Length: 277
Image (cartoon, rainbow, N blue to C red; front, side, top):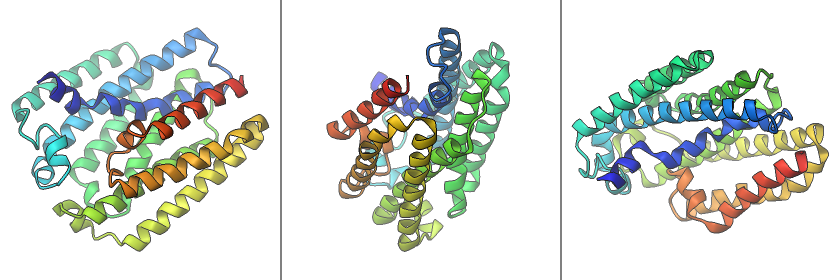
């Protein structure tokens, strides 16, 4: 049961909240223990909040997941390895925990409220609107980014925000492309996406991300330009693995299950910090 609960609350997906650390890294404040602790607290609050959203979404999508050829085995509610009553209990528990944590960190309540609102709205309604639903998901990453900036009282550059937005769009569009290839659920078929349009959006968002990253490196610290080939390799390998292995619906799994991709991401992250500082 414990393993199924861990799958339901999706701790590994907390890695998506790593965007919160970008402002402290790129603002020369990473060496400040006080600010780093503050960002860590915000990271944990967003992680607990995102768990609420994950559980809520799994409850809403349980019937659709049961006919999905992968999710019916991967998701505990769809696989009937956890009861819906337990899921409701965990949802209430993490929601209360979020409120308790916020009571000690009221300065980010606006960001948490906005994150809650767009994700609940997405689960109940916006996920039914083609293309717009991708924009809604991407906006969640911008909220994380700006929450990180607000925590350490710095401004987020437009180029960094555009980089994060285009990267998230690239990942989500690949996810939709894989779903289209599988197309086994009513939600995906009802969206009536065009594979050609999704492919164009995937290529366009990838180009925008790489261009923004290049500009960001040049004006922030040109020493980072040496890392651009690694970034390019990561993008290409992520795309190939997502499509060829048919696992693009689970972005974190794509990275964690491929040692070369995972090591490349770690090397890029550590090298960025080393070169920047």
